[in-house]
Image (cartoon, rainbow, N blue to C red; front, side, top):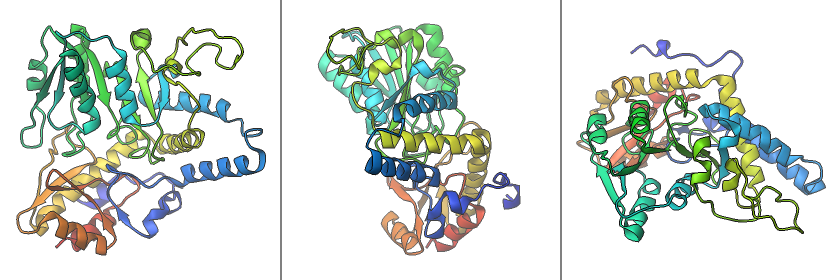
Length: 381
């Protein structure tokens, strides 16, 4: 692959200015914890200045959160009243697990290679209510869509799936799975932390009922702040964790009216993580200005280039690179070097990747470059 065919960054976009980490590291671990964008950093600095000088009096922060909620909704093809802010992906998934009314005959279909946040809530339901948790296996880095759909039975209540599997980078066909679920009245819950900000996501076109995603990976924002989507028609089907903010007249402190909000803010039980939300909003704006379609095309081209170059140094690509199955996560192995030696050698050359499942995992973002991939290949033992 000629690196010149990788889609260029937009005119006027200064990658080094927006991502200062480029001056210090070849950072290929956005599937772990990403550096925050300069836009997010400036939002945090503004919050700190306002908090230091004026407390809450001049920041107008809660009005800003309304605008950011709308931005997040647009990012995934949702309506603003379907979006709640969460501490992390786990909290959103827990809303689904703990909010629905479960019965012992219910079944949940998932895979055997999900991140633990998308495993333990369902295991907990199996323990508490006798719900059957079916985990479809991975085969050579792929989840067979037909096999997953065959696991859905008349007893299946929910399919819980990652859009992109964190270990292999395999991209599930969520549109086909969502359509199958909707036609059969099965709920579809998607862990999208490894896709939102890197791949196009449209909850309506994909027939997704619930989605959760934290901001600290492909949204290049801080840890501890993300989004949860609940389809309008299902808002009153999930019982929320109740606090002071869930109700219709939350700021009327002296009169108690336990009427839950009718929108997704019913899942927000207390005071917001204001700095996290402001940073998340700044990064979403930046990503949308670049364009998610361009980001997706660029990261897929960058990782195609990486996958072409890895065999030159004797490494085997584990991740599927088939159209529709590839992502910005590349899992690969070495027959002659153990993973810790590789990680140590790369870090000495200021290249950062991660170990997963006994393999090596590189996850560059759109602002990385073919030159950085060349530097990684050169540094590999």
